Length: 420
Image 1 (cartoon, rainbow, N blue to C red):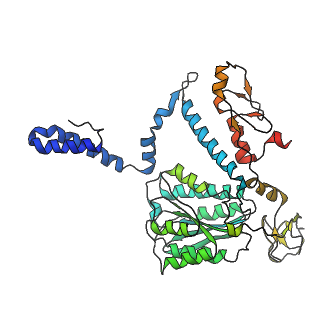
Image 2 (image 1 turned 135 degrees about the vertical axis):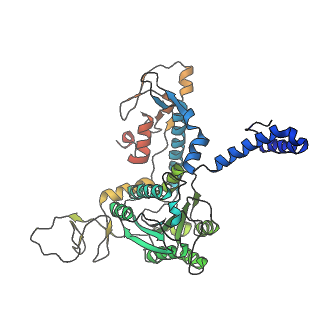
């Protein structure tokens, strides 16, 4: 009798034994039936179910001896910490690459009928909405001088949901109101809408489009490769993140325009793939030429209650034409001057000068030397219980816990002791 966990070679042998011995090999047939049933059950699992079935997440749990509650085991915590620290080191190693500080991006969200599939929990539409909302906020957090717009694809057309602007809450509010999937997806129509809007962008800004696809087909009115060639000529970089599978048309579009392509395995992997496009990508050789950009730093002056206003009103006053605007960063509606605030300009420099990766504490050497001194984080002053997760700054030699290490590299973007 062939066990249910045999490899495919053993399955072939079992079928041969069954055919050779006829009714006497009935036991082998039962084993094969069990294997086929197990394979069918595994194939019917949804994406979020496969995640827990493959990773065996219950094996990463242990009981807390003090409280008796379940917690993630120490080995799993260390593995996740090392993986995250490796990503921070990779970001720090890209310091010498030329990156664009001013980006103009359209996010194309596929809201065709394929977004109603339930292979993600509770469905693709809900997961896409959460990931896009998180991406919008992270995009403006890392690119304060950049602008973003939303395009939704459904019923075979591309609809520009929001124009390019620097207001994250306006995009989030508009997306929440339109999360309704129907019809077919059109790659050509959506790319045409994005390219037409991006072609008027100044030369100093990088032009990008991010597709979040659910459909396995595209319904186009003409030749899609003509539109891809036009996007490439306009220097539009197209990135694609697919929820279902790799499509030749979307993969080739990303390759020809210099973008990235990825297929998500589950909801967490989808979140990581989308968030990977929040930091600015390295510029091409043609776009690395420096250019001067005129910027204005408006002052905030409240409008008097009895003042007569016509057109756009706001609390910020343009330093060139004294026109009023309501948010920063943006362009003056009168003289088209780029208006920013000094904190926005300062925050955008951390991509050019990232914090060096901290050195891990050599826990093995401490064990050999029987070092039992209590370690304390220099930032939060908390006691470091796990020495393997501690790290030290190469310049100031201060020691930090893992939480402060992550905060310094991903949020603060400078070592507080080196800068002082």
